[in-house]
Structures are given as structure tokens and as C-alpha cells.
Amino acid sequence: MRAAAISMPRLNKMPGMFSASPKDSKEPSHSLLDDNKQKKRPKTFGMDMKAYLRSMIPHLESGMKSSKSKDILSAEEVMQWSQSLEKLLANQMGQNVFGKFLKSEFSEENIEFWLACEDYKKTETDLLHNKAEHIYKAFVHSDAVKQINIDFHTRESTAKKIKTPTLTCFDEAQKVIYALMEKDSYPRFLKSNIYLNLLNDLQANTLK
Image (spheres, rainbow, N blue to C red):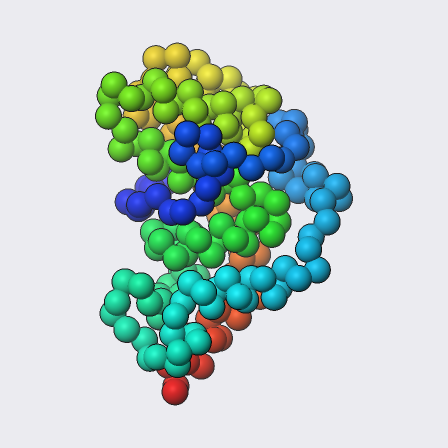
């Protein structure tokens, strides 16, 4: 898997990199959605999501046509997200919208970990150990609040690698999580109201 070069989004979950958000730990053998029954999705989620998208994309409210401005999202860009998970994650707004979708499924730790790994690869040598510890404790450790769903071998292998950290010590775990998102969450995202409503609004707006 070739990770796309991207900047870190505003997702705010990881200690030291994102602010922590409480969530029950999951055992390695559990599904990403094991805790769903213990959590109740807000009844206003759909309305909140619509308000969120409109606040992010100015021309949905103003009626402005598509622009080349980096602050405005076009229907063409959103359509490209459906070509591959790589293209979705290469787009800053795509990361944000996909992150919101994963949060609605209580699996936002996947994209947070993937993005943390992307940021880690840009880390200076003298900061590797500290940042590796942060990522490991936040996502990989068996007691991590945002524990990712990886197999025992990958978890143990990663634990050994961070003892003498390099820029690639999280690559194995990152590939597992990318594959999980690509196979599981990404297809559902493309069929979700979050994605389809956004695309429909943008397409309708370009006709104005």
C-alpha cells in the first residue's frame, strides 16, 4: 500500500497529537463495532451532520458555483473519492468527512491511527522515541483507549519495533488498518447518506 502524502487534519483524538476522547477499550479479538450496543447514537445525528457539512463548505449555503479555491469543495473532487480509498484520504476534506462517518460507526480510531502514522513518518530523528510511545499507548497497546483492531502478531511486532523506533516501525500495523478500512468501512461510506447527500448538494449547486 502506498500511502498518499497528506497533511494532518483537525481530528482531535490522540494524546500529544490529538486531545483524548474517552472510549471503552476493546479486546484484540473484538470487532470494531462490538461496543455499539453499549452506545446510543444521538437522534439528531443526521441534522448535526448536515449542519457540519454546510459549515465546512461555504458555497452550499451561499449558492456560489464551484471554485478553484482550496477552501471550497467541488462535486468533481467528491466524485473522485469514490475511485479509491487512497484518493479519499489524499484529500483534506475527504479525511474530515470520512472521519465523521467512522465516528458515526464508532470506529474513528482507524483513521486517527492511519493519520498519526502519516505524521510520524515526517518526524525528526530526535523526536521518534517520544512520538512512537504516544502512538503506541494511544492506539496499539492492549489497554489503549483508542485501541485499533489488529492481530496479536502485528501488535507484538509493533511493540518490539518501538523500543528502537524508526520511521517505519508502524508500517505493518498501518497497512492492516488501511486494508480494514478499504474492505469494510470505505464501501459503506460510499453508500452512506453522509457521502451521497454531500455529492448531491454539490452537484445541484453547480447547476445554479
